[in-house]
Image (cartoon, rainbow, N blue to C red; front, side):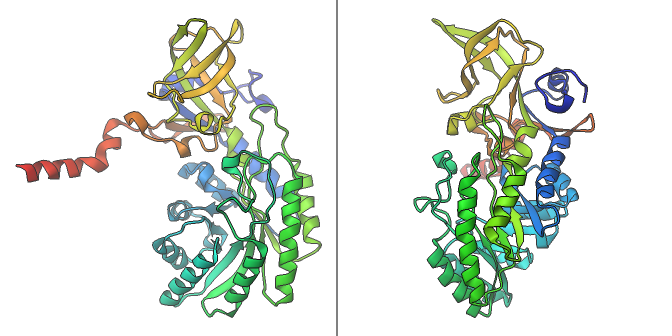
Length: 420
């Protein structure tokens, strides 16, 4: 990248106007060099310890992103069989894939077993019994971990908090213990891991360590029962800087988890998603025009809530700038063409005076941006581009109208045929 702008760290510069001209907008751009830095920083935090970094596929599931991480040695945390298939498609090692999620179907469990992945992460006693039955039918042994809900408040947005009893995830420690005892006695279950994940966008270390201590104590009890747990999975959730947050120090994070284990010999698994790709990503849109309703100023762009829903869904804040403009700031809302009052990328932020064709850039859009996008209002999903060592490359073409309606066309045609 060229060295130019204060908008970027370590001298990285991206010519967003050139990228917008070349690939059109709306557009997602990912800095693969930054993805590598973040993965390696987390891996190195557990240097000389048995550890496995399993990237949370849901954050950004583009195959090129997954392939890049797989080549770096990453494992993968998947919450659907589709994500498992994506990981396998890019050459991920089967023994580095974990299948999580509250509502796995029989078909998904069957396929996960047949693919011989590392662990199926079980979320309830009912799911454990169903998995056992499916494994019996296949005459296979299911390697499992159980998600423990430690009852720790992560102090994050309620939609991404997962460690309290009011959340749908996991089971309490005593229920987990009963499940492990059942699994140990089963011919078709192999209890191999223990797991917790208390929420996402965590910027305080203490809830993570509190949860690790609770689950570590359960691990000690399980080992006393001769249940051989090999993997201690601390989940993901490490927060990033969107505005003025402070990131958790990785050395303190690793040492805190190791301290909570009190010398127990297990492989530590962590499942970062946002931490690796969040600030590697930029959402790029073009200004259509400005509009004033009385004193209220709107900057209307071709990017919308269907492209980036986080501001509308979570009230999330993303820093935004106009490429090449820094002066004449004024308060405005940045909005899109979708027919909803909830269609905004930002509210009451300061931006320069804009004109048609200006390029706006939304920072921190690498996680839960494209992966949560939709075709609402029959809008085509954006293209995705990677930047690596100064070179740009298309990694997902922009959808066209024909892509959007293709699954419906054959049924429309058959209905017309029947009508005739």
